[in-house]
View (cartoon, one colour):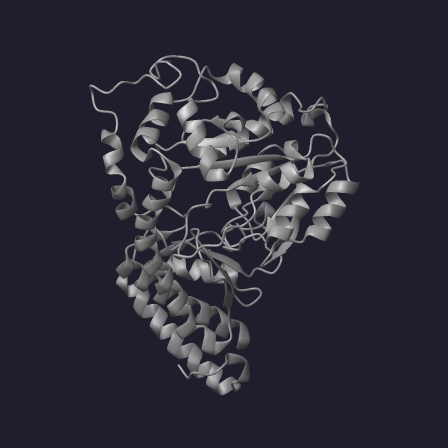
Length: 427
């Protein structure tokens, strides 16, 4: 294809490019590929990195925690002290403000929503008894966050973002003037899917909010706080420090897990919030369970020993993931940039690249990829109710395929972007 922006081509040249691109697409269909890039899953090589974790508690190991409790037995609802310290060090939090759960941070998010919905928090009526409940949703955002609030019938309001984070003027207006607004979803470091890192001013603006609703909470999902793709990562202000400085410690729930550090199906998740919030949540969580898997918590602590060792371990992940992100970004630069038919983020960490296709083509591109043998995250998934009003955003998840598979997948993706753009231009 001619190396020139499609918008400047004659109709005849566009028709020729369309025929050429269609032929390339047909050739890919003939290969009968079967690749799945729908979710940001660690690849097998990443999972192999942590296999020694399974031997961290040999048969003759003591399973007694530092508090003297037997981790094989009931009790310690909030988790073992060693795990609280480990995760507190990761987040810059206080150990007594940590709750250590099972393998899933989404489970803890669901629990926080469920408690507010069924029982109410901060002395307020349960959400199920309030006429309208709203959540702010920075977009593009994480589809599973949106699925959680949609499950509880919460009305979701999209909030645009830029390289510094959400539009804080809009956030402030909603939160401080509308008592039906009960929360906001945030992925502050390497946001899903854009990969942006919230600026310190944005974090301070969150900490300074004065909500109209007493039961408002910031759901601060710090899933990628140590998932760097660079040797010189940024060190943004923590929500803990900002809220302590603002005297607003109870405004946030912060979540983190080892899902992409060790094993997604057998990791450890944690919740951080003020002690007052923790006591309230624990009262309800103590009805749900007598305690999460403390033996697995101990296994992780014995394996890593401290937060610095966990950060060092993440460099092994970086060595695997950086070449994959380079494949995606290099291919987009070579195949899409000269044609002027897309824009994308260049993340310094996290698990995704956010791609914006020509308006009105995202669904077509995703379907073309699927028909060509590569499954992507559904178009629209990065918006509440799966409704991207521009039909433009596509989440690219490079982590699971091998490098060779990823090269094939990205070659097909670029062909599909060209094909959809050409179809639109030649209508």
